[in-house]
Length: 308
Image (cartoon, rainbow, N blue to C red; front, side):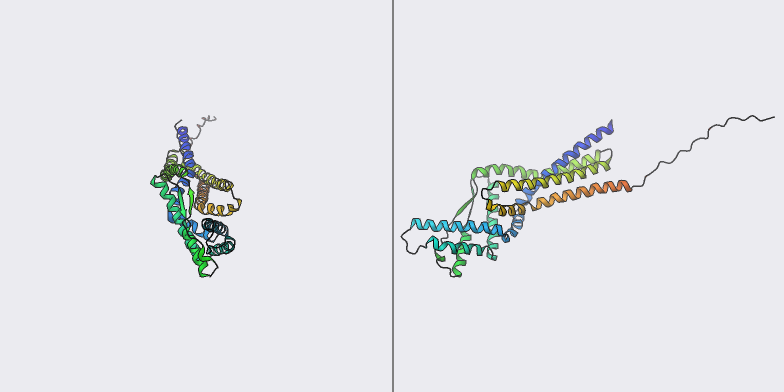
């Protein structure tokens, strides 16, 4: 009866530990991966050379420049020095796309991502109800400078004004702040709890080899579940985009941000299967110890009658 109780309690603790592993890994990824500026910039840096990302950035910045030119034309239509939007548009579009393939763009990309990350993180931590925005003026200024150096006609008329681009509305910031605070706590305690529960389940098990095998298989299953969740999240994220043309760029950004989480998933699967296989091999290769045979007493012999 005591052995059954120990096995049941061990199985419950191990199952709970394996269930917490993928959630703990996800929370730790958010709290210590996405929230860290250095790790975030390292993950986003290769995207500066991605053609899909370059195309979206060029379209966004080019559209911002043309909006500013159109606004100038509306506010001062009689200005003879104001450029015609039709004449500037091809130069601006070509210049922006050319700029995305330069080393200066990589520098601007890193600086822009740092500003975005700091703005979002500050909004999540300071407790104020405000929208998160970034300014495209620094990028526009670099493009104007490049056009001017290349002697592009009317380049000096491109307006460089503070263009605020909204990243998160105020109500979304309040909702995300609550989730971030929960994940910040869970990112530490969930992995610790999973390790403690698994250790306790193995310690009280009647057969520890079997408990270790179950923990290893549960760890591999948790890694597979986490990998599946990342794949489903990618599909749902891309499906929510209103512009299908931006899906390749959004997919590249999603893959870059979740690369660490996918690596952790594969690591859990590999370690779990390796530990389970090791337990099985040690069980098969262990020498079978046979109990020493106890000497049996010779059966009593019947007395024989002597013949006369």
